[in-house]
Image 1 (cartoon, one colour):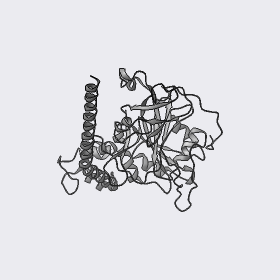
Image 2: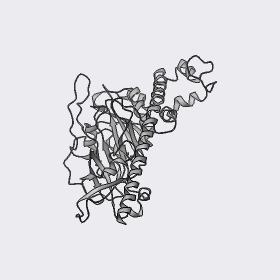
Image 3: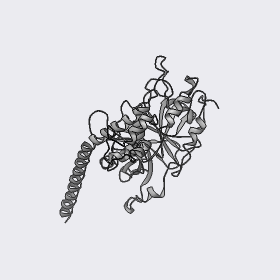
Image 4: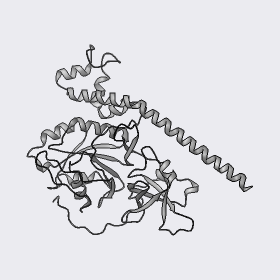
Length: 374
């Protein structure tokens, strides 16, 4: 199979079911919203979004109501969200629609916003799988992959490591073996077509996958190969580090021919996983199941895995059955999430206060309006 992009016919219209609409999502629609139409968010531009509507072959741009933006789930409106749209104004035509509400999510890949702000940023919503892409040469970094896999664990989706640009090296077995210690692995090459059928099989009809990774690892080339067209610009590979240039500038939702939906994302320069559960340890342990299992067998329940006698983790490191760098990464990520948990709790409390204040203001306006009506 060739990895080159071939011209294709216009894509067929997609049904709501093919876009991922389910009975569980429909249960969130109230009686008062029965006349609104479901739509899947394909791209986000501040106060506007591109959405897929049922029985359409391409997304269209619509506006967001202010309340839809304010009341959006954690991290703001994201690609992959399900929205309810209705007429932009009374008497408006059926083509003039606006997003009234963002529905609750099944899953969400969320990170802490870039910089030092303790705010969540939703990268992709309602995804079944997160494809963590890295190049087999130049970019491969097991510690960075672990960080991505912790973020995947908090999302509720399944994580798969996609090793790209396999055509750049003669032998990939060692890299594959190292990555396979962390999560399921697919070895691919957009240029030769290696692994593309297996990758496409991870995105069957009715499902959504998100592709994430650093800049220049080959995500755009894989997206184009899966879509059969040049949907994303590809940067030339630099000789000195075998990495491509940063080319994708926004998150977008694409329909894979014969398959499901794919979210492509710009390369991330930094990734700080956002705490999803009550305990930071739960999210980290999901990505470090092997280390967590050993920790549970330590002699002391409060073992710090340093000098304590009977430490199963230290014993495994000394025996050569566990990588000391992986243990250090596990401990570092646990510390980071624990340190950020306090700031994230403060952010959540402030958001709740703002929501309560808005609800109070709306209730007051309604009471005043009722009195004037009398």
